[in-house]
Image (cartoon, rainbow over all chains, first blue to last red; front, side):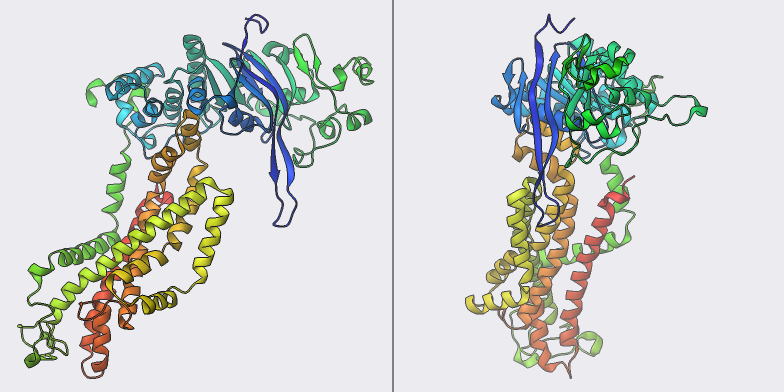
Length: 332
Length: 300
């Protein structure tokens, strides 16, 4: 399924979210751009992996999509309809989250039945008998026995809790699921079970995932397209094979290098990123990646690169812009 | 549960105790909590069944038997704790006095609990301007000395049981607001709150069904502390003559009436004082115990 043939179920157009951050009591509020001019489109049935370091704006983007935050500017469209124009309940029917930490995403005072049936009760669907039937059905689908209905989250393991969170997200049969690092809080042995479950559910229900992660191996396993985020901007977007075979942006290359190998003798890989993540309140001039970029020149410090369409997707780097003086540098 | 056991590890793992079972285990392993709850239970029982337990009418005066000493100081079993300066039975007045103390404690804590919880939860959940206003009100309230304000109000309106209850209820909400605000701030950032909002749950539903059950343990602890606080303040106001008015039996009033004879008949002050001490100690023990058994750091 190529992006051209199917209409995007989820589309972001120039979405920007700016917070005002006050430093000290008398300090002037400064803008912090958490999400900067992000445009993405997600065709039905695809999995878009969104990768980037901590603090790059991945989770803010997820909150905007869920309607928990409103964008400062730009539009978010679901099936071509603006989400701000939709009421809370109809948005909730189409898009649901699976959060990172199943120890925090389930209310410890509620039984599993209460947690999983909450969407049915909030949306006023059916009666208690139907809730019971539907909860049993969805628990069976996510691989939990029906008798967990009367237990509490504290009695379960991390993997079981994440299955409960998945059941809660899917009981209303949404079209889009935002997975915000759904495996990073789990043991490695359980991660693959949950990933396979998510893959199976996607095929069974025709779901569309936005899969947020900092683990490139997880993204490679599940995603069909990948977007790389840096300081609130999408610096590269590509299909998954393209990204892993021939990463374009120097930041993507560094991320790929940073994946730890299981070989004990090799040590921690050198990403050549050097300095720490820049302060998002005072972002660098020009190309925001230039202080950490191994191939940056003076031109990068002054001029911000524009997005360039490539055969695989899109990249924001002077090296790939035919109109930029840097274009020749790559060839040389 | 054992009938459907299979070899699938997923089906076998759920064996831990339920939260209710764990709570029961901690409650019955906490001596302070059990002692406090036991003493409070006895005093509550005495207050409720006062007409059946009191040997005499607490208002009946008998000038023939004034200031009889308690039985352990050579008195008779007719008046086990002696009689006061008007010949009223001390034990009966103590028993009826428990009603006044517990009623004031419970109703004042209820009024201030409703006010303080509403303010604190609103401040913690909505933040921003609401938080600013509530924090300002808390600071204003903390800057006022409770006893002085209560004295002034009671002096203007005149002392009575109702006035004392309402004044204390309107003055003691500060700790509720502070604790509930902090607890709500802590809980509202949890992902289950975000999940409930993403499901489409309304704000009242999120507050009542997702946040309140998770901060209720802190609320119960503050309720007990403020009950003890209100009981002591009532005794202080009654001692100063501005609280409950005679001839209503109140422990504070009994201390006040006994103070003239304190040098010769110290038991007239010591007996109501000791009962007051016991009640406040029991409530505080219970509050401390409840905090211990529900504190998150004690959870496994």
